[in-house]
Amino acid sequence: MPGQKLLEVSDSELTGDNTMGEVFFKRFTFNQLVEHWAMIGTFMLLVISGMPLKFPDAWWSPVIVNLLGGFEMRTLIHHTAGIGMVFLGVYHVVYHVFIDKESLLERNVWPTLKDVKDFWQTIQFYVGKAEHPKFGRYSWKEKFDYWGAFWGMVMLCVTGLVMMFPFVAMEYIPYAYVHLSTIIHTDEALLATLFIFIVHWWNVHYSPEVFPMSKAWITGNLSEEQMKHEHPLEYEEIMRQMDEKSEKITFNR
Amino acid sequence: MLSPAKNLYLLLKNKYVLILVLLISVFTSIGYAQEDVSCYHCHTKVVSEFRNNVHYQKGFTCADCHGGNDQSNASVISYNVMSGNFIGRPNRNNITNVCSKCHPVETNDYKMSIHWEQIKKGHPEAATCTDCHGIHEIRAISDPNSSSNHANSPATCAKCHSNKEMMSAWYYGIKTDRFDTYKESFHWRALDKGYTLVATCSDCHGNHNTKSHTDPASTTYLDNLPKTCGKEKCHPGVNFDAKIASGLVHDKESLHTGELVFNKSNLEPQMKDYYLGPFDLAYWIAIFFKILTTGVIGIFAGMVILDFFSRIKIHKRW
Image: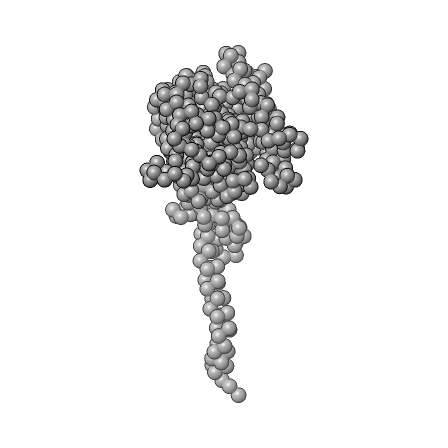
């Protein structure tokens, strides 16, 4: 990955000290971290303000609406956070397609055949019949998370805007399609919510491996230990590249 | 031997007795105050209801609707009250005559409605003034407890329009799921949570002069929809093709329940082009998301569980 800072080495070069400091591997750029934080903020607001409408008869529905300050305030919160998420989605695509210099095809986020194999191997590992698969920069779980969110964002933003401006939409599409938007919007939102709260949070919060949480979402870094465990192929690749680039710095492998 | 006055004094010195005497005197005075109309002697419940009536608060009495003399007293109350122009309980066909004495404009509007049309056709059970506004407990429409208040309109209309026996007995073809399908709309979900600035039955269908949606003069007639939805306080400035934004709102919203209740055979030919595609699409998309959500969450939640148990078994993973 040319042009990308792969790891941060603390202090060693500055002090001229030969002993190594702790090595961190760059997982997310600051830009990606801010995108993720904005995503967390808008997503949580949207779930809290939206679910009382998806389940209007549930006992907690009026409770949440009242906690948010009434129905009008709920709608205002949902619309504001929704517009924020639309901007986030547009920014994400524009930045990573046009501003990020890395070639689109070379990115590690595209699904590959290896991911399908890894998926199967992971299940076999869970039942004790195989070794744990070795992941590269992004595991199949992370790719699924990303593309799931990507698909969800497209669906939710488009249908959300249709529902926010129904009469503008009706100048171009039949009312039936506006109605269709409510089905797609709420069902897709329910899927996204369940996925984030159950699967994503298991992977990054609850799993004993990372409990109470993986700090990568705050620092953007992974420790060498985590790197060896979670992304061994990428780790080997980085080490090989570093060896080629510089014979001066030596690492305690 | 104590004097009677002394005896009374001792009795009233007991605070419980004193309180009892005071309470009795308060209640009896209230009781007498309520007997400002002689009808109260027999029609206690009805007159009590009438105390909440906006007409009572403006100084009207029983006689203003029922006729007769409600200020008579003494032993021949009944005879004296039921004198002169006394009409008793008005026939359902004649209720409008009572109200029109003071509300001629509203009555004229009402006489253009499908409800009046049905009464004229010999279905006296069709809604008349009292069915929406109440009988003795008529409140001002601005009163949140009024049955004809904007926010209570769904419940008031549903009294009759959700009643299968009534709907099929009078006029075959009126659907009884109108309130249920309205409940699927954003309007109801907002109203249910206390936001009353949304459309209820009367905002789209009109109130006094409500008409069948097949009547070209109806506010819910296809060509009139842009005007109805585009009311100043609702969605001003809307500009949509009424043909593509049909008025069959209630039917579409039944789709949220996942069942296809829409009867396509009843569609007018020009409507079929607009609706059949999206309709089936909506049905299948609802099914698609059911399968997708169940599938994705099922597979991944299953893997979370497998992951959890594999950790117990292997203990140390790496």
